[in-house]
Amino acid sequence: MSSTLHRRLTAPLAVLAVSSLALVGCSAGGPGGGDTHGPGDAGKADGVVTIYGTISDTEAELLQQSWADWEKANNIEIKYEASKEFETQISIRAQGGNAPDIAIFPQPGLLGDLASRDLIQPAPDEVKANVEKYWSKDWANYGTTDGVLYGAPLMASVKGFIWYSPKQFADNGWTVPTTWQELLDLTQKMRDKLGTAPWCAGFGSDAATGWPGTDWIEDLVLRQAGPETYDKWVSHDVKFSDPAIKAAFDSLGKILLNPDYVNAGFGDVKSINATPFGDVARAMGNGTCSLTHQASFFDGFLTDPKNGNATVGPDKDIWAFMTPSVEAGGNAVTGGGEIVAAFSNDADTIKVQQYLSSPEWANSRVKLGGVISANNGLDPANASSPILSEAIKILQDPKTTFRFDASDLMPGVVGAGSFWTGMVDWINGKSVDEVLTTIDGSWPSS
Image 1 (cartoon, rainbow, N blue to C red):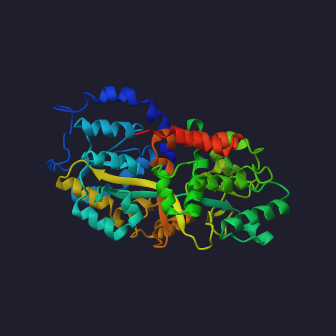
Image 2: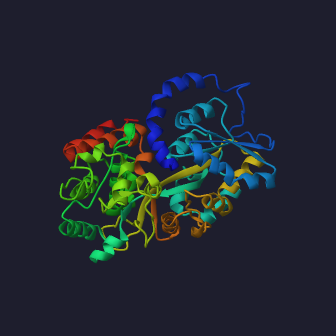
Image 3: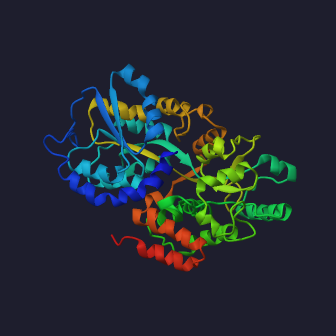
């Protein structure tokens, strides 16, 4: 499971835990409360660097494996701690004097909030140099607050892939569309030829049901309205009820609200909400469904034996193309990732920060499988699957405009709340105007 997906599934737990964690956090810091390094305090290099983040289970094991050789070579022990309550605990620990040396932030907004309160160290010169050399300006901006770089990107994910069968396309003379209108035209051709709905979708994800729909909308806002409008939408300077956002819903509705086009293998339009997003892999694998929209991590679901053990590649069972823009040649993508920032600035911590922002670390981790990075020094050939290699190439392309997943940047009550539920309501038949007005009304006043 990607760390981005893990956060989506655990976010509601973090929200519910705020009040109880706050009580615990009141006594967590101060004398005897643990490591009291903080901004302005250089601390003392002791050969141990603590890292705190959301990456857990197998991914955490691979993370620790990725730096194991470097630890030995540099005589620095890295102690990693994972937490499902990271989003609430990191603020509590930072204010209570019990912060880790380094934190891996899943949301740029959370890092920016702590940086604006002078709770995080500005990035050292060594990290600044790596970011300038190996990362795009789009990525650097997500680690920057008020013009100051605080963190460096770590891993990444690419969203907006549309998965299909290369053989089915070849057999029927269908070609990969290069514009949104071509995608709609292709959908109708497929419907006419197949006699059934070509698309399938699943929004089901327990307490996080609806999030796959937000990914669709984010793709369309970026591709149709452009990055400037996208950025203003994230900050609510452009409201959900704005014509640009409504246009994205209307465009998506031409597919997801059309009973002739969905929901192959599962039912009618409303079955989208009841279909677990992972179940779509089985429909793609057995040929029941011809098209679906999902991020790069979907590769793992498709190749899982319980879903049919499909092969993924340009000439394999399943492959993918990016959701096309309004005009041919558009190269804008949405995705996710992590930002690494520090609460300490001793020599050991700086060395670890520098390493994690380097192509050496990126290649080490990507070789272990399952993830990618937007580091320009990463060799795409080190990716563990063809789709991950393709995603790396997209991220490294200087012509690519990258924007972080909008719902991860919005206030939690919206991005992990009303936006998700709004997608469910929309699929269930509520009018787009009512859905968008409700989401706007949920936006915090301050």
